[in-house]
Length: 297
Image (cartoon, rainbow, N blue to C red; front, side):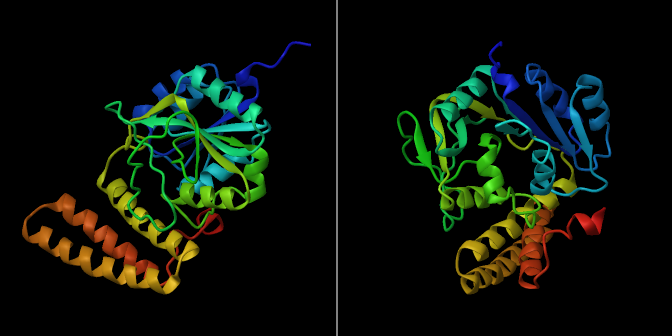
């Protein structure tokens, strides 16, 4: 009986939203992938048409509305029938040899639930953020460890999951719409005893900010959900009273900045600060990041 090749043993998951400008190149680099699952969050461009033309063998799930990243990823992971699954952002470059190396590390050690390469930014510099639940600003390590190392967080743009560990912790928390859902998952993984391993001798390149077509609406959504997600994860893993006090400070700080940038006629900065202030105020009112699948289906 022939032995299974690396790509026979891993499913690849992509989440798309108005991604026509980047999805074709992402699929090109995944030409060897044999189990490809793509969840589209109600794109209003021809993203889905491009996918179906280029990879007619892929399982494509098209949502009737934008469910956010975590919920869409959970939908895709529900179809995984392999031991491992590679979750990849559309703007991340990864070689077949790196995927094989990640799988070999999983095979060699049953402890990790997540294995990741070192991440580089578009300039080729190490862009690996390692943080705890109280380290708000995603401070990178001051000194890069030598060789492979265990950590408590890796960003989710290029990670290999052991599906038994994924299922054991229940996947992403769907109360997040965008941002911080990967940190929350990592914290639950480590609490459940599943390690997070970074391989120091292989890397992937995260170009950053290119997964969706830029627009004022996307900019607002990113700033809004980054703020709401940060506050939610703080309240979930830390002190709720301290988090509420922080939210009040964010309302004041970013509200004043938004007014300043109106006077300075700098609409981009005004919009970003207004989105952050609005998100903090929404969090204080108990408003969820989104209404859930049943409300939008």
